[in-house]
Image 1 (cartoon, one colour):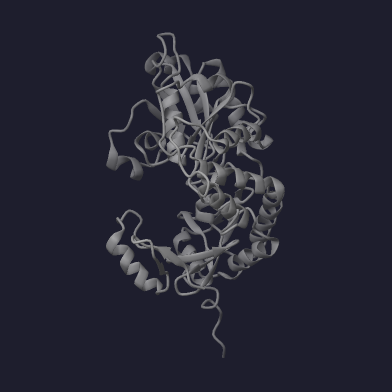
Image 2: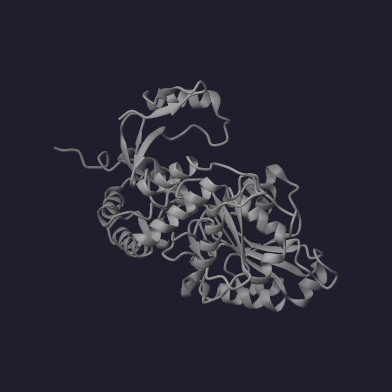
Amino acid sequence: MSTLIPTEDGSVLSANGSVAAWTERYTGAVMDTFGPPQRVLVRGEGAYVWDADGKRYLDLLGGIAVNTLGHAHPTLTAAISAQLGTLGHVSNFFGTPAQIALAETLLRIAEAPEGSRVFLTNSGTEAVEAAFKMTRRVASSSGVGTRTRVLALEGGFHGRSMGALALTAKAAYREPFEPLPGGVEHLPFGDLAALEAAFSPQAIAERGEVAALVVEPVQGEAGVRPLPPGYLVAARRLTTTHGALLVLDEVQTGMGRCGSWFAYQQPEIGGGIVPDVVTVAKGLGGGFPVGAVIAYGAAARLVGRGQHGSTFGGNPVAAAAALATIGVIERDGLLTNVREIGAQLRQKIETNGSPLVKEVRGRGLLLAVVLNEPVAPQVAAAALEAGFIVNAVAPDAIRLAPPLILTADQAAEAARFFATLVDPVKTPSESKEPSA
């Protein structure tokens, strides 16, 4: 099946050509921020994709938790096409029905209280950047915007722009671009004593009042680590007591990825709390770039007219894509599918008898296969050779974030791969004993 690509003169060209040929062209034209592509993919359908050589892969990464409905979902593609054929873009001097309906829908699924509002963006990084700006507007005893301390967690990943990067703890990401916006303190992951100490009278006397705590309910880039039960309850108590914001980064965990609309809505993670701000993106548009900041109650008034903006944020095509994605999740019962298939996938991998598998952690269809050895890159490479797309998110962890439409048969297929992969450097077929 040939894939057609528009060209500058309005004609189309075929995507025919080998992976090697396309890779050579990639390295000559694309900035080297990602390294050479592992494969050049030309089409997808459901949970599968095909490369330029015609090889099929089960996509267990979903564009890093983006392709909520898989590839080429007919409802999503129809919604995007219909909207683009009607009204593609207007400035934010004007509203559109799709923009307004999306904001209303997000408030509904977030169960946000009266007075809550939404700011629409193009990406998760932009959503976090907007939330960071909101923290600068939190009032202290000295007046509006005079609090500068923002707390985040070690292992957290919040984006690559300067503000989002300041919240991100990984030194390799931060150091080439320092100095970053100041005032951010990184606390040990899940450490309640450290959290209490950050709000102590001594800490406040030495470093000032806290403006916000920014956390991921489940840390994705750190190896899919859910916050321990009770942490967010304590965080909500402390931030409320001290007049600070509780900001939840659900860019990766939101939109049903963990089996509920947002991970914090699960009792074992959130304990029934209501945050001040939630950021969301990735799976929101099912593959179309769109993100959002959901500000709960009074937090919606922190940023006013002229204090923030986005040229493409909330454009009608992105909003239509997000509405279609949410609609399919509801129509097809995908939150239930995520919980059921996620549990099956986890159980099958954990009990497959592989000496390489230590455990599987995470929620829903955001999982990490934790290995007994730091060989995740080799396992990911072997998976690709065997026809599975996964991600070595840590030296000893493989991240799985497949489309929410994943079936029981596909989950079993994935589990069989982990069962047969004995030597992490080899594919399953290569690891068999030679015949006599």
